[in-house]
Image 1 (cartoon, rainbow, N blue to C red):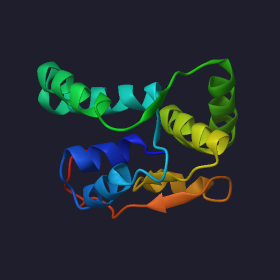
Image 2: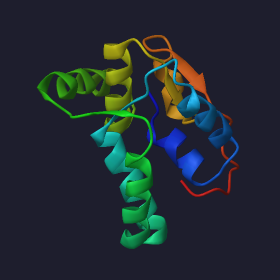
Image 3: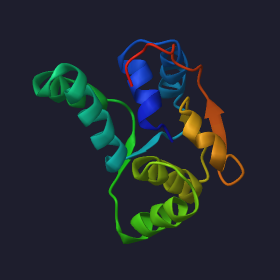
Length: 134
């Protein structure tokens, strides 16, 4: 399960993007992402570079070997339960909830996930430099 941090690291060609590429080219494992997290990637790129660039990035993202998951009632409530207990963004709660559902690790470098490392496995990417866009 890759969160928006991981996808943006790949898109921006940051250090962690190398590991994301390795994971996505490994066909021995499934790759998961919620459409909530797709939306998060889209709005972050749109804020940085505009809607046209975000539209192009969306085509790139949807070409990656993911199983994209809709946010149904069960996933929304699982994310809400995590949100009720932790100071994590709601989008990140969807990533965690999906990872728990499919018994996968969340691939991220987002330090907010540190607080839930006891309830979901985390594969940590290298942190972004302090001056990098968020």
